[in-house]
Image 1 (cartoon, helix red, strand yellow):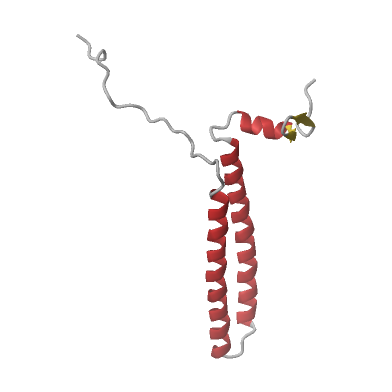
Image 2 (cartoon, rainbow, N blue to C red; image 1 turned 30 degrees about the vertical axis):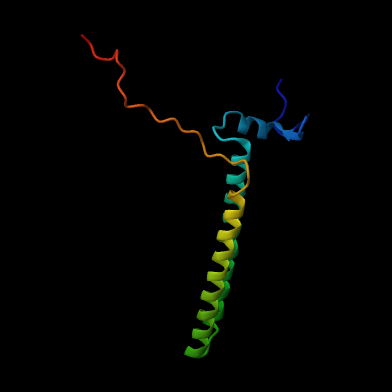
Length: 121
């Protein structure tokens, strides 16, 4: 029988799961780059979730407004907060992606140069 994927095994760098090992075994990216992309995706999901909650709260506040001045104030606060949130998010993503040791995937493009032996005689 094979061992379940949730068991851990000890390696020189610490305990890793078999599932993580099998996921990174055939990856074309180095482990540091894979972790950075995963961190960036997780950060993006958390940001979208928090922004959606703020959007819903703004909609509720706008529905509770009694005058146009109240609506204008709610909208101005919402836009100012959104701009600040997006600025902070961009800086966090740049921080995640600027981890030292990350190299881009090594893509080898096919050569269009002709070989001297490729013309039939």
